[in-house]
Length: 236
Image 1 (cartoon, one colour):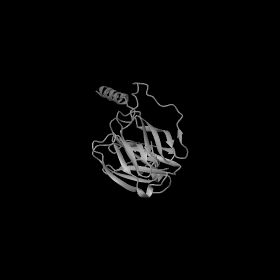
Image 2: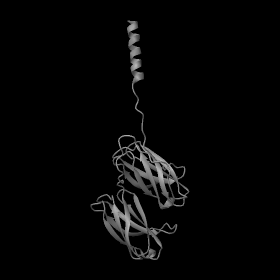
Image 3: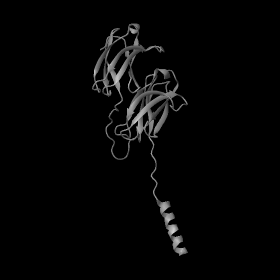
Image 4: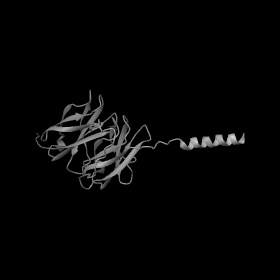
């Protein structure tokens, strides 16, 4: 009886030892390029699909913890993709900026840092999974906008992309060629059906003769910001 019991224990130990352990995978990202005091482009790896991540930037050494919320990012198909984020005014002029992508609903997060002293593009080879073949890159659906036209000292027309539906935005402008922190309220905007649409905004009197003007949309519902910059001259 004792021999049978010892044999049973030995078999159980073998089963315990031989259970395969699946290696954990964690989302990471590399810095692909930097435009000083303007933007940073990253490339992700092993990101989960269809999850929301908050994108924070902060001072060097903070790991982005309690940083400035730059935008919110939907991972789409996950895995490997590129995304571009604008550097907030509070961190312009910093030599090193921490950046953190953090999930509000899971324990996952990833952080990195970049040098904000010289504009550059990474010269290492872009990672490509061996299998399956990677899908063509599709931009992520975080809100952004481009400058379509400018009437010097009077107005600017923009075109949005990936805007959420039926959200309220505050539109602000400021002197883009200085370290000025004063943002002038321009208008309130409801994104209606969202996606891509055009809108024209009057340039505030205080900025009519400035060489460069920064413009931002502040989402009043979700508390994030998207930026751009334009030259105050007739365009196109």
